[in-house]
Image 1 (tube, rainbow, N blue to C red):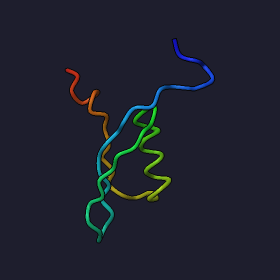
Image 2: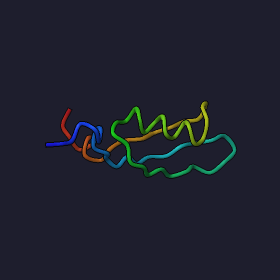
Image 3: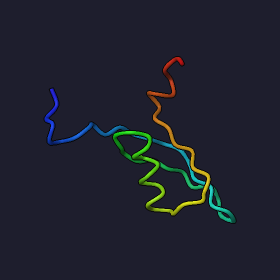
Image 4: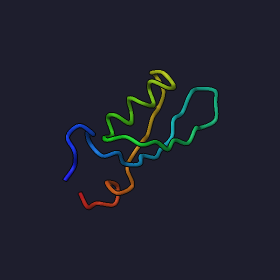
Length: 63
């Protein structure tokens, strides 16, 4: 059982960001959700870029 004070468990998210005029940047970060992962990337690199980010476990699940 998880302690409520600790929040949601972190999972690894990977992906890339494309910033105009620069080489593609590979991403690897820990977050509790894809929306949190995207927010972390936007906080670091700013808005207006192409961001693709996913969790490998989620990507392997059938849809």
